[in-house]
Length: 210
Image 1 (tube, one colour):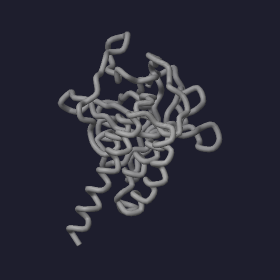
Image 2 (cartoon, one colour; image 1 turned 180 degrees about the vertical axis):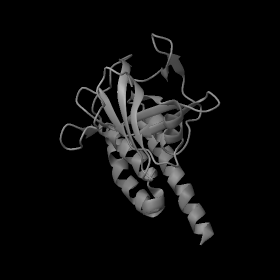
Image 3 (tube, helix red, strand yellow; image 1 turned 90 degrees about the vertical axis):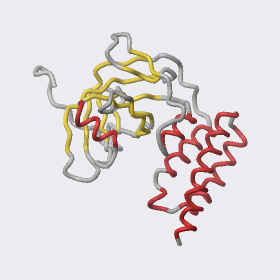
Image 4 (spheres, one colour; image 1 turned 60 degrees about the vertical axis):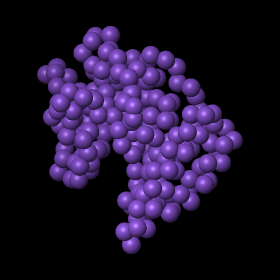
């Protein structure tokens, strides 16, 4: 952290902070890019972000090792869905920032280059406060759409399969599917079908292990 800048305190959820869902990219040890959905707590100006990755995550290990990452705001729900359950296939395209020192998702609506201010990993869920060092807005955000939000909720549910089990998630997917069918385009339908197939496979595997 530059010596002339005061230390940052994390935004407080429900006060000066709210969760913003997006994609965090970090550099792996071999130089490849790790893509992970994450909902940091941010302030209104998006000058500081509070990330809380688990210690078992690649994102945590990369942030601790490099002290840097990029947070992206995107309306690409297919990317969000794939990243929620593993690395996207095919891997998304990246471009360099205007300064040339950071790789960002080519299809992002907005991006925020992060520098880690503090990292507390005493607990399993870590506490990482980051300062925004650079930012850009390559294209407009699509806007509020029920189908996109339904896929986002479905992707978040998929990350909690170890807590709730596949059956409860598939039941919730039936409810979310209504919004996708009524208000979505082909991309939202593909994303929802992808997540449903992933959870169905998990349910089948769980049944085989019983």
